[in-house]
Structure formats: structure tokens, C-alpha cells
Length: 491
Image 1: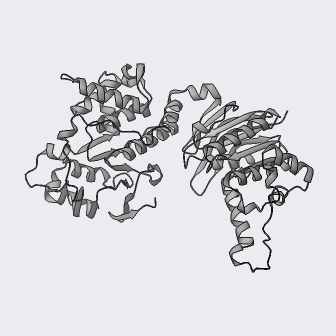
Image 2: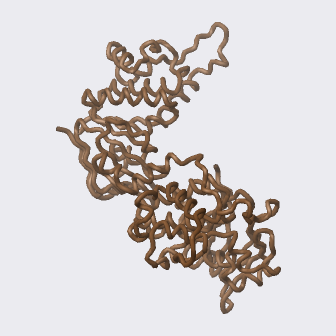
Image 3: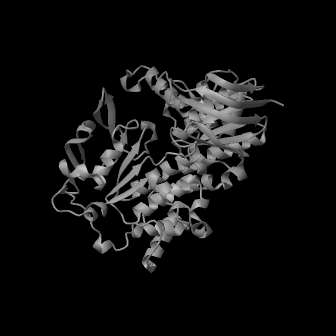
């Protein structure tokens, strides 16, 4: 029986990035799905299984003689090449369209008209065999390329994002075809972006996060894991309503016609050593910023100016939420617009408390509950718990019994219950394993994307940014001081 075994393997992705696969064994006749978000290393995993990725350390051993990989990018290139081959808009009246037919594409690698007809019938595209390939629909081109791959009779078929770009009916048709292939003994690996795309016939599942295979095993066991279940839960949250504030009629908001933050030529120094060195920076409405830089660059100092916790904030030209610092505002005037989560806050939250009470404490900006809680606050907290996938019995379990990432999610919800204009997450991924990092990043995107709060996301690494980030402020070393780079990110 053929098998593919990868053990303690590190594959090269670039000059500094690697793909880490601890232990994967794929046996003949099995059906696997590997799931991960954008940037998690899914396509790299497909190439590692195929054998086209450079192995730096560990072991990759395969008895499969014909491993074939099919990706969405290959399909896009094939369609583009066909249109490039013969632009019908430029044809003369007596000039034929020389684009290849569906049958030509299916038989590009292996010429066998009888088998081509058989596969096309199996996939329901036999009537399209004489049609020009470039005129097919997305679903039809996907099936055509699958037929082309199967003409090569692979003993291991690797499909990278096979359901991307397909409507609901086309996805179901493709899933049915793949299920039929599996019943006929085809060994198969599907690489997917969403848990909901895992077809019922799949037996084994792996979960990728930060280019690491974070969880792997039998389907039911992996999908029942609390973290994986929460990741799957997050796929269904887009467009959901964020719970209201405690009293929407009295919600305090900064002026809409002014920037949230304006810092002009900001300077902070200790004993003549500059920490911030002439930083000018503005955060407008609708922007979500990532702030990156090495340890000691001054990121936390900048945050403390914003939160009102730094004494030198009053000696700087700093305007927050439409009010110039030092114009008579109280610390409450500043902090009521801000929600704040950091690794140090996480470590400080040592009181014995349930998950529910941690989120409830956000209404009082306290660590723990020391006053009466209203029915309205309880109701809103229950809504937040359900949104995070922490409802039911889990809500009343001890906070410290959760995974580190789940605890971080609860603290983020604690900061958001008051609907602040600005949420500051200071190194929110620090100390998290790859699966928990993916969990927190995905929920940040959900919570920020569906609400009105703007985000400052502070990290050492640009690649940590959640998808909602629109701008980046970089602290760039320049001798004994730092220069500052500001960029707008492509959507």
C-alpha cells in the first residue's frame, strides 16, 4: 500500500519564512482536508505534499508514483493563456477562432478520446467537449481541468482551493464528483480556506496556522476541539450585529468631522535620551492602524501618550477625539473613548473569575466585579459570549481554564462592551501558539469589521496584522533614534 510520510519537516518558503509540518501520514485510499486562513501556508503545504517544495530539515518519504497538484492559480493562468492565444475581438470576418476546445484541454497531457469522453460524462460536461474552453463558466473550467488531471491517472490527487470562485450549486456538484472519485479508490487531499467547505466524505483533517500544522487527526476528533470549533464558528459571523452599548441613547462619541488622533512633532525623552523623535501622525475616521517596531522603539510610549498615562503627553502638541491635550479634559474624558488590551493586562487579570464576569467587568473598567450588575449588562454579556463561541456552560467556567487565546478573546470583548471609539491592542498575539494566534486574528477582523470601533494594533511583526488593517506606522532604526514610516495598505 502506497503512503506519504512527513516527519519533523521544515520546508523553505522564502529567505526567512518556513513551513513546519511535525507529523503527517497519508495512506492510499484516504481522503484528507487541510484548512487554514489566508497566509497560513495552505498552498505551500500542497506543494510540500506534491514534492515541489525545498525540504530544509526532517523527512519526506513517498511511495506514490504519480502525485498531481491542481490549483486555482493554474486554472486562472490556463484561461488567460487561451484568451491570449486568440483574441476573438480582433478576428477578421473570414478568420476562424483557433482557441482550443474542452476536449483539447482535457487531452493536453494524455491523448485518449475514449477516456476523455468517459471522464467528461462522469463530470457532466460531455456536451461541452467541442466548445471553446475559454467560453466556459468558472464551474465548467474547474471540471475540465479536473478531467485533465485525472487523464494522468494520479495515485495521489492534491486539490488546492477547489471550491474557490464557485456558487453554491457548483460547489455541491464538485463535492459530489469528488465523493464519487473517492468511492472508486482515489487518494485525495483537499486544501481549503473554510471549514464549511470540508465535504462529508473526508476522513482526516489538519488545521494550519502561521505556516505550522497546528492540529491533525481523524475528522471528528479535530473538529470537536474547542479552538477549532471556534475557528469554524467565526466563519458564520460576517454581517452579524455586534451587541449594542449599554445605553445607545447616551453613547458618547468623538466629533465625526475631526481626526481621532493628531500628533505634531511628538518628542519624548528621558535624561536627554530620545524615545520619540519628531513623530507627526494622524488617525482619521475609518482607519485601522498597525504600529510595528522592535523592542525599545517607543511603541508603548506612544500608546501611553494616547491613553493619558504619560506625563509628557501634556508637553506635546497632541489632539485626541477633537480636544487638545491640556485643554481641561480629565483622564476619564480620554479613557471613555478607549478600550485597551495588552499582554500585561492579561497577566494582571489574576482574580478568580468566570468568563462571564471578565466580560461584565468591562462595563466598570475594573479587574473583577465589585458592584451590582444590571439585567441589561447581563443580557449584553450573554450576547458577547455567544458571538465569541463562549456561551452556554463555557460562559460560567473559570476564566483561567480557557486556552490563552480564548482568554485573550474574552479580554478583547471586555474592552469592546462599552463601544469605544478606539480599541488599542498591544501585542495581542504575544505568547499565543499558532492556532490561538489564528483564532484571535480572525475574531479581531469580525469584531472590528462589524462594529464602529477603530483599531490600533501594536506588534513587532508586519505579518501579524489582521485583515482589517488599512494603514501601518513603522518605527525604523536610524542610529540612536528612529525614523517613522507611514503607509496605506492595499485592500
